[in-house]
Image (cartoon, rainbow, N blue to C red; front, side):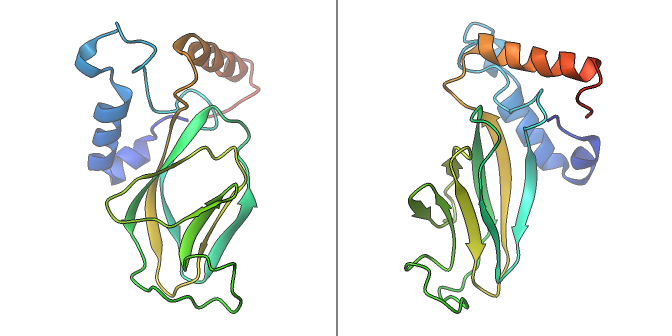
Length: 167
């Protein structure tokens, strides 16, 4: 992905934070290429940053990402205050609003970022009557060296030039 103009227009402070905090190399240095270049997962069709609202009494069924080149960050913005579930069945004592990644079940907590590799099987649910809103941000997986990131982005740029991928 890439930062879309309409996102910047509607959410200028968030866009500025993403640009200044995650896209720019600290202090303009290129010395630490393997650590800091473009942390945002840009240059592929699989990088996203958006506000995700999960309404009350809803879920997103188990699924996986198409690759494991990124880590997905969930920044909680609005969390249900309800601690009881409206679900009709007991889902193995899971929290009323939460996420399962592989065998691990978690809930979002105010002031804490939840980080996951979404290549693992995962699902989310909100069994309350209140919405859950997070800022979802994809960053490059830290195990991908700079040279491989560049090759991956170059591959997608070539595919785009050849008409195989459209932004």
